[in-house]
Image (cartoon, rainbow, N blue to C red):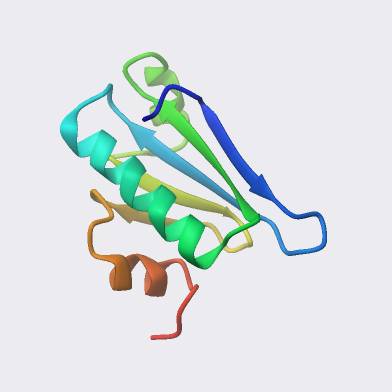
Length: 104
């Protein structure tokens, strides 16, 4: 589940991916987005990623500061450029292409 704010799976010898998932509480859609993201990361980025879950119910000012207009929203912080994907991340191929893990 999303009890931990930061989930890490890093191998110091590989490129680092930093992903932020913006949610609004423990809703079914938020939980599904986190589970889908974790599965994608374990399958395609094993040992190379950090997931930070930001709950906008607890910290609404962060949503305004980071220009989050819909939830859940996934933001790829690193590698650059910054990329945003909105939704529950259930379309794995769309997420992989959107994050540039797989080519178009």
